[in-house]
Length: 128
Image 1 (spheres, one colour):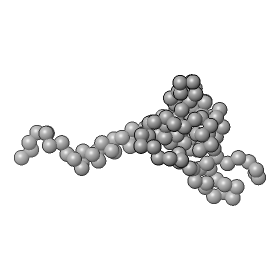
Image 2 (image 1 turned 180 degrees about the vertical axis):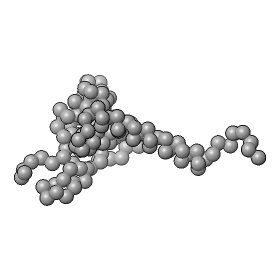
Image 3 (image 1 turned 60 degrees about the vertical axis):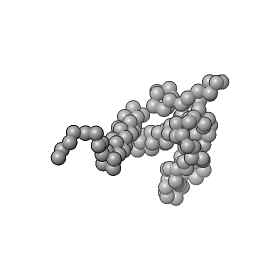
Image 4 (image 1 turned 90 degrees about the vertical axis):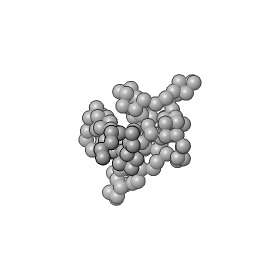
C-alpha cells in the first residue's frame, strides 16, 4: 500500500527489509536514560502511544525525568525493539515479553559460562 508508514525493521514497499536503526550514540552506560518517548518512537518507527502501552503493561519501564517525562536507556530501546519484532511475528505482548526475558536470561547465562571458561575459579577444590 503506497504511502503507508513502515516500521523500522519491517519490509519496505518493495518487500525488502528496512534495517532498524539503533540509538544514535553509543553511551558508555547502556542503562543511562537519555531518550525521550518521541525520540524512541522515531528510532523504532512507532507512535508514542505504543511505547506508553509498553510502560502501562510493565513490559518496558522507562525512568522518569524530574518533570515526570519518560526517559529510555539504550538497553530499554533494544528491549522495546525486540518486543515489537516479536509482536509483529504474531506473539501477544505477554508472550513477547516472556520470550524476550528468556532470551536475556540465556544471554546472561552464556556470558557467565564464557567467563567461567576463560577465567576459571582458581580458589576451587584441588583436583590433583
